[in-house]
Image (cartoon, rainbow, N blue to C red; front, side, top):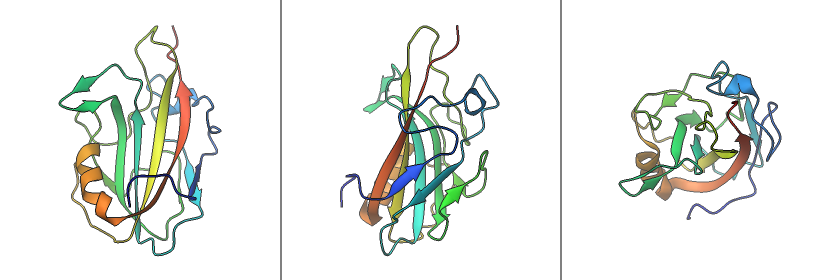
Length: 159
């Protein structure tokens, strides 16, 4: 299956779909990942992966675009929510080459950016190693993808 959207639903108690991400979840705040929960999981799901990507960031390098803020995977298939500031499961690296969640903080004067929190349901518990980039993760999970969906939030840096 390709990365087409499925019936799985992803939401946050911190912001509505298309809504502003609260400052506490950004680089201007405490940089805490927002609480997330999901439902309508595809049958046969054994694990999940989650990423946050800003396609509005003005970065293009080596065939990649935007800015990756979070790569999290090896989430067991019986988990259907993540609390605020979660730091368990396996961390990949964001665009600054470090692990963990790095909240939104677009360049000053760059306007509103959209942040795509993408959830992937997988047919196996892959036990992937720590430190994968978004692009490495996508390559590894594509053959195991049962479904995906996204929650998009927005943020504009304060002046």
